[in-house]
Image (cartoon, rainbow, N blue to C red; front, top):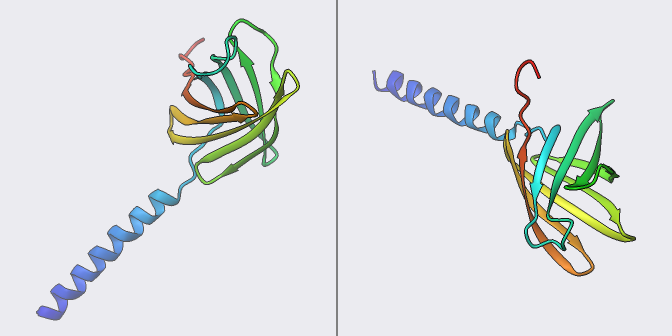
Length: 131
């Protein structure tokens, strides 16, 4: 009887551990349109949107700032686990963006350029059905 209870306990623990390992290893998806806030960025660059797409197993990213229709093409887009990395040029300045997908609707990270590092917060734009 003790052996059966012990075996059942071991199987239960193994199942719980396996389920939690699968859940943590699932990649979080950054694809979509994200609105960002960067309150410590220089004037004109404190908010905007970032669009992330995936085609043929390759990520592409574009970024625009509030008040402008121009979309900056981003380079070297890479996703590793729950993080998104890319770079862009703004006014001749190289900016490296590092983001972490927190959940389905939030990312946090930073933009690094010659003047320092600026924290970013992104919220996914949710499309309403029928629009």
